[in-house]
Each structure stands twice: as C-alpha cells, then as structure tokens.
Image (cartoon, rainbow, N blue to C red):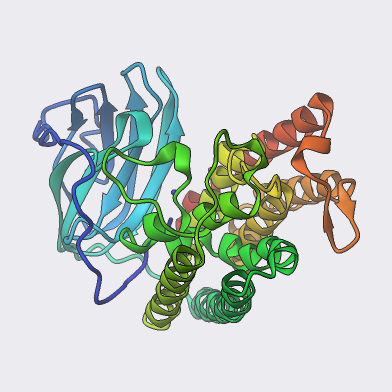
Length: 391
C-alpha cells in the first residue's frame, strides 16, 4: 500500500493480470464538483475505473473514490511510467467511499483501480496541467515544511541502512544453517522493513520480490523474498513441506540480499513532500489493519506483533514530522491524533515479552478486537491528516 516519491532506474514490472482500459468519462461524467476542478470523483466497479475528469490543474487534488463493485478495491495515482506510486488509498469495501488527497505537480500520470486488490488493475492516463494558482506559504510554515521533509528523508535512509545490515547478518545465518539464530533475528531485521514499508512498496518491482506472501501470489508469479524463507524456517503449519536444499537456501538468501542492496541504493535518490509523509503515515496504519492485526502477514513465524509495532513506529514518526504544521492549522485534529497513537501504543505494550512480543497465537480474541478497535479509532483522524497539512 505507499507514498509520493521520486525514484530513478525503475525496472518495469511484468503484467500480473489482464487489464481493462480506464474509462475516459471526461469532465461531464460522474458527480464531481464542477466549481472545483481539483475535486475528482472515482467510481471503481468490477470492470471499470471511471473518473469524473481525466485532467486537473496542478495543486492539491482530492479523489473521492466509491466502490460500486462487490470486491474490496484500491485506487492509485501512479507516475508516468505506471510503476512509481505517487499516492494510493487501499481497502475500500463495497459501497464504501474514501478520499485520497495529494499535491500533484503538472505532468502525465496513470490512475488505477484494483478490484480484489490484485494485478495491474484497470488503468488510464491522467493529466495534471500547469496552474498559476500557487498557494502562498509564509516563511515560518516553509521552515516547518523543510524540516519535516529533511527529517523524514534522514529517518528513511537510517532505517534502510539498518535493514541492509540486519539482512546481511540474517542471510549469512540462514545460509550456514544456524536456524535458531536466524529465527531470532528474523523479526528484528523485518522491523526496519516494516517501519518504511510504504517507501519500499513505492518500488513496484522490488516489493513483490521481497515481501510477497504465499497466499497473495498471482498466477505464474515466482515466489521469492522474506516470507519464502520464513516458511522454510517455520514449516510447522505447512502440509507435506519439503525443506529447501542448501543450494536453494543460498539462492534465495542471495536474492533477498541483492534486492535489499538495490532498495538501499534507490532510497538515497528519493525526495519527499509533506503530503507524501502524511499519506505514508496513513498507509502504514492501513498495513496494520489489513495484515498485522489479523495475523496474516507472518503466517508461519507468528511474529506479527513485531511488524505491528514497526508499522506504528513508522506511522508515528511520519505524523510527528508534520505535527507542528497541523497544530498551527487544526489543533483539535493534532490533539486527537496524539491521543489515539498513545492509546494504541498502550495496548501494544501489554503484549511485550523480553525485547520483543508474544506470539500472535497467544492473543485472545478479545485482545485482537481491542487492538483492531484502537487501529480503527486512529485510522479516522489519520485519514484527515493530508488534507490538514495541505490546507
């Protein structure tokens, strides 16, 4: 799920599913606000992705996405290459509407709806035209913006460097057969991935090679990455599992490390905007809601709470980076977000064990519900963060 990023040297992702061209409805379609050309309406159905307009002037755009289909869907604004994720909104259930706010400069983009949240989605071109309606930013606010962007860039680069270091240690342990030590290091290394997961996911070619879950594989997709190795280290839940050979272990471990090196290289080339940071905070919490709180992410190791905490860490860092901007514009929202983060963290702290967390299987249904309720309570004000930052 991911944020507005500038990346270079991206490799084209193979087509994973058949696509239907995005419906070109023009400015007369849908029920968009004709008085505001930056307010777009999106109807995501089973076989169409209809926008109220396929162009808008540069500036703060809001896509009001309604799911008229019968599957959970997602909506993406992609770069011209159709690979780089500029912004997205995920987990839109049938008959549900959700808004995506992004500051988009002039250029050519691609929009995509993904019914069932799989494949390439239903795509179409989207144009952002030049605009002379620049929003004035006073010197004090610009200083806060610059600081937020610089601090978040430093945070991502630091987490990426730690991910690379821990992955190097992990793959060496795994290749040499020190499985106990590899199991102990697995959730520790994964923490650094999960803290910047929305950044990593913005590289559409790397993410599926590094973090695909077996249950989410597309037809014909080769499985590689963290979760394949996870299954080999924790095969107890698998039926008739055949352990990987030493040669296979080395192949998959070296592949994971090579992709991590590539990720760290690309991270150095990224730039961030405050709307990207705000959308990234929301996106990380969506990762919690759709995988970690349900116990689906770490199906084999049951280390989901490590990932849960790491996603919350990353979301909170992103929020705190833009917090001074929001406090000046919407103090009530700022207070609500701070309180909700604290409430969620208190529940997570109850599940700590040593330097980590209890197994997901040790949670009672009541504890899972409490965590889920706290995530939902935080999600609502967090959905308003980007609009507040850009107001």
